[in-house]
Length: 89
Image 1 (cartoon, rainbow, N blue to C red):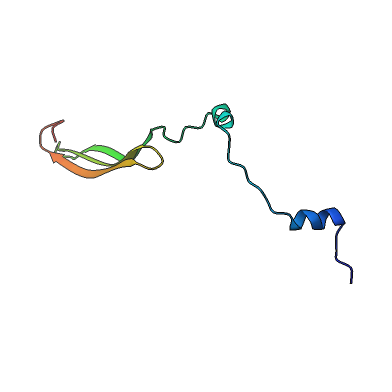
Image 2 (image 1 turned 90 degrees about the vertical axis):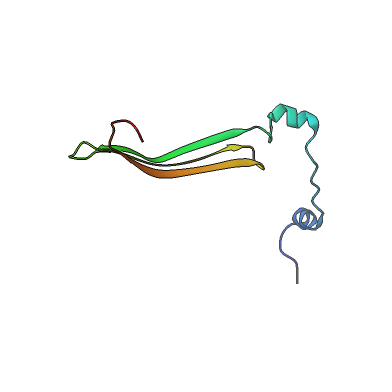
C-alpha cells in the first residue's frame, strides 16, 4: 500500500519544528512593554434622589484596578447614604 501525499509533504511532517526566541531587535521594533501600568474604573450605579419630605439619598456601586499584567490593586465600593440635610451624607 502506497502512503498518501507527496514526498515533500511526508518529509515536512517528519521533520522537527524549530522555534527561535525573538531577537532584541525584534522586541524593539514591536515596542512591546509588558510592564506598563494601566487602569480601569467602572461605575455601575450613581444615584441621587429626594423623597417627598425633602430628604436626600445617595447610592453607588463602583470598582476599578490599577497596575500591570502581574501586579494589580483592585478596589470595589458600594453603599447608600441618607441625610436630612441637603448635600451632606
